[in-house]
Image (cartoon, rainbow over all chains, first blue to last red; front, side):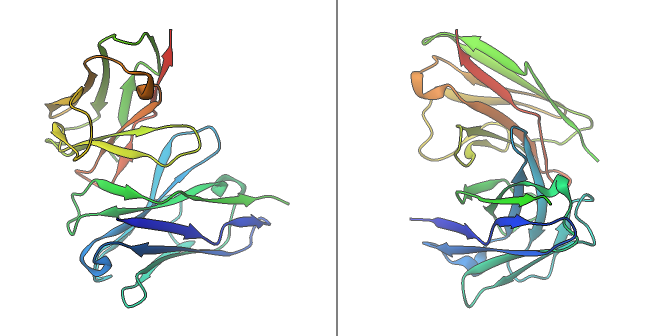
Length: 120
Length: 106
């Protein structure tokens, strides 16, 4: 059974940093691209970042470019999102989501999400 | 950037109704469109990919159609478990979601 479990969310002050993790199991992690998608309270879904299976291709939404860094460790079946210079508008539930090994991919499995709250 | 516009934003329907949700792209995305269902407090669930392909395990009352810039998600006979919010997503160029359509009990 495919499982994605996010962790690392919490309360952080504006300008602060946080590192999210996503632990994957039930599939060959190194064969799939991965993504972070967020959802602000009461709002819709916003794609945040993409990383290919080998980490050779990475994309970011304009809203987080230069502040967030996506990475993965295929040996540990883990995906990460380093978030720096956090702003109030980054407050959201952050989901990791699996894609296929191509850029034109939907997201077929999602984690349960981890809440990030940016507030003073 | 490609913008995705869903209509309606909210839909009131009864069990057994046929329901249609529309998604329009600001430019052609071929058939690179997915539909997701999300219930409160839960992660989105993939229903349809490549505009009309049914994800494994998804009931056959869900169907998708369209290509280019106009797409539809149809639920042929609404069931109690289907009251949720539905999102379209384009993945032709980066990834963009529609604003969502909430299907409510009439």
